[in-house]
Length: 452
Ligand SMILES: Cc1ccc([C@@H]2N[C@@H](C)[C@@H](O)[C@H]2O)cc1
Image (cartoon, rainbow, N blue to C red):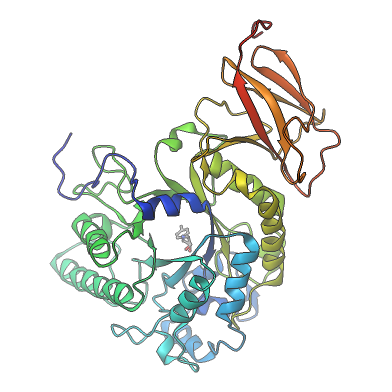
């Protein structure tokens, strides 16, 4: 093991109450909102078929024209209570909001820049209103912060000479001051989600990323920080040069999951974040985005996929320029939330079911407190039957379809094929969306046919 000054601060996952709370949430609401929601992927009458939050770069918009958008950011239809109600409808237990994205615009009245909410027509403190509204509903708030800042004069992608080093040192000082400001203004925040840390300039300053994590944890005990912030002494990111995870959970899964089912990720805490359109985090009004919205049952599959491997799932919403949530996204939230309302006990507080193999037709999840195992059937086979392979030596005693209120176990029929292998005919099981069964299991005691 190398002796690292700025490597991982622990070898095992955190087991304190704050981390256990974050881990048990399983479902979060990501929100990308900023000036980019105003053009919403369209510039000078043309749709730019790329992520809406990248518009200033992709459409090469002059800085002064981008900054002028702040005058149109009136928040005419922004209502933090309505946003928080969408999170409740989704069944989200936490929310992560873009405090500052790559364009440098701040959703709070920062004392360290002029590019912020205070210099918009309403002057409202969007972060303050959101923290109040979400916490009033018992939903934890996390802050997304982009270290990358296209607007700041001292930002550097690479460090070619002393002048670059001096400028970037000023930039890191600015960013640290903003992070201290966020921690001081909003001390109830539960986590920081860092982005924009892939450039050489940041990788060459692993010490700063280590200092940021230390500062935040000193000021907000229990705060949770994602691995994407961190670079070590040698510029290694997420995982240090000794192979140890930095930060509190791995956050490399962006618009992808551990396919087809990579059990290695279950060894640590992790979170996947996902757009509702194919590839835009900010609201994009064009058919390029609006014709690619995910189906609610695909979202449920992703939630169960993450849970089955011990990870959280952060579903992104891109509110429109006036502050209203996009109706199509609210509808998806409602449908997923209704499913979670019936089947959430297989998700919240659940994780990897040790000893249970990937079944292909869905996922096994296990309640981390009770040990109860669930089968989440998201890919029903054409036969209408699923094969349940239990860990060797175990047998199926009973099956209960979640949502079939009041019935004891044994409610749903099954038959043994051999040993610990059972077959369930899904016929007759009805539920809106993917079926979930609670499994009652026991040790095989009597003689049974050997496993085939
Ligand atoms: C190449 C690339 C850079 C940054 C991103 C940002 N990370 C996501 C979480 C969004 O914030 C997106 O703008 C996506 C792709």
